[in-house]
Length: 369
Ligand SMILES: Cc1cc2nc3c(=O)[nH]c(=O)nc-3n(C[C@H](O)[C@H](O)[C@H](O)COP(=O)(O)OP(=O)(O)OC[C@H]3O[C@@H](n4cnc5c(N)ncnc54)[C@H](O)[C@@H]3O)c2cc1C
Ligand code: SF4
Ligand code: SF4
Ligand code: SF4
Image (cartoon, rainbow, N blue to C red; front, top):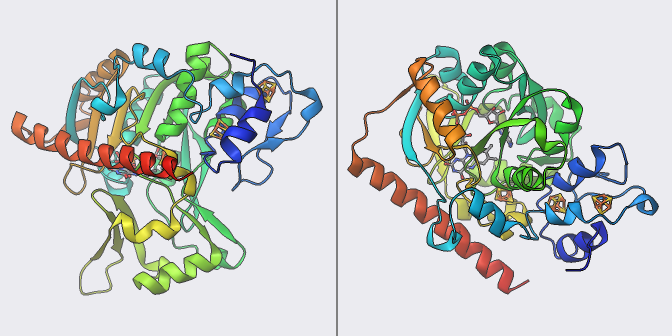
């Protein structure tokens, strides 16, 4: 294969509208302070900053989730051969779990399991901290570093009560540019929480043995059917269409559909379910070109789908993930719902259905590209 460069990513990925903005290319290329590419507009694909300095090494091209150059190698490492016949990827076990710590459970998205595990890793000095995400404005998330429990709690959940910021902010995205953050913590051992596109690019870097992936100790993957992007005018349309005041939203959960829990107005908590297909206008277009729902390359994957309210679905995948999960269970950090094999089978079938639907959505989208 000819050596590729960022110019090829522009042609084959950006110009086709399928850049997932995972930031893998930026993270690798800026890790040595080359300052060659970067996110100039945080809601658009990365761009050349100093094109003349590009070494045409091709690494950005190899680690991009949209070129799929390293798929075969990754599939071998992560023990599955054909994605389409095994849509949930290789897994060791599936559980439905909940944090035993009341604060993680109260402020967590589902069962507060992800942040409980990160807190355990920090307390046991297995990592120095984690790249997570915090809410700064309605439907907006920003990558950040957390190395203690109060910060993990502060960044947890959905904080949408910042209505005054609506006047200043013109664009909102539920997606976070977490991967370039790795470069700010070069000398730390990190846990990373990420969507499938983000963890794919980290795994490619690890496969090639390139920096900054050596700092990543453990990959905690979130299920992800899609992410959302709103112009300010769309937020206003969203509020009107669904009759939901942003300041009333207490929590957002994602299971078979998107669930908005509103604050108790004295007559009980109101819950609104919005099917994914009603949110098409707000979906990030590049998410159409993505086929991994369950984060098949994570050490452990986490989602809401398949579990009851206040529980997180947990899928252990790698040896490292399996060992960590068994440690946190033994330590009493999380507890599991009692599921027999038939309930586990039902969970896997439901999750497989969503995975298949995402694979099909990508196939259709790519046909019409
Ligand atoms: C954008 C997005 C889409 C999702 N889509 C689905 C879905 O379609 N189906 C499904 O079943 N589950 C989905 N999930 C996963 C689900 O919402 C929960 O995050 C998961 O069940 C873990 O819950 P928890 O209570 O154990 O996590 P918590 O203990 O609350 O921890 C959640 C962790 O995720 C981090 N985080 C939050 N948002 C982001 C983000 N945008 N990027 C990176 N990290 C982030 C937080 O910082 C925190 O560390 C999605 C999550 C996100 C963030
Ligand atoms: S130097 Fe290499 S990684 Fe950086 S933009 Fe050029 S080809 Fe991509
Ligand atoms: S690596 Fe990520 S950010 Fe870079 S071009 Fe590919 S999808 Fe876009
Ligand atoms: S669907 Fe999720 S994993 Fe796929 S590109 Fe969108 S944000 Fe990334």
